[in-house]
Length: 177
Image 1: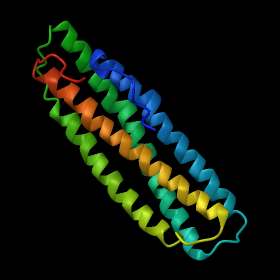
Image 2: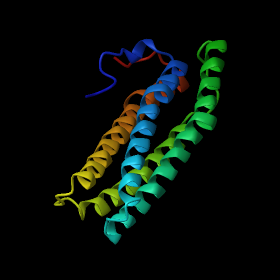
Image 3: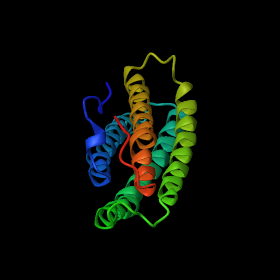
Image 4: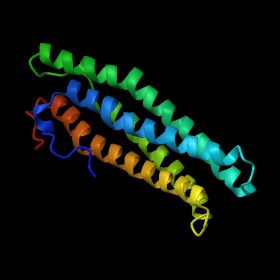
């Protein structure tokens, strides 16, 4: 289910959209990462899984580390910059002098890297697609859920956040509906 349906983002300013990402979308990704990690750990601790599953777990751990770093970078660096720009925009009556393409480019490059790593993780997981083990199948389902969360987050950035930033830079009224 799309967690964003029913919300009119055209009524929100950039500051509110950034808060939404941090409080909703990123929180869902973190929760899914943690649940997936606990599922993996419960399987790995029993030592009853084959070596390829350990490799999948290691791949997941690296992926989780990178996602958590990227979220922290957004929340601690990029989002405060965007919020500051939004406040500055309000004080300057809509004339933003800063180049807002830079945060968009940074976030976009992070998204590309994450999608490549996600594909690697899914390729490793594909080895277990025919397993009868319910616990391993749960791990695979968690990876699929994570894939959905991340792709929805990226679509939100592209379809809501980035246009809002560019409209602010161009001094345009919001065209999102």
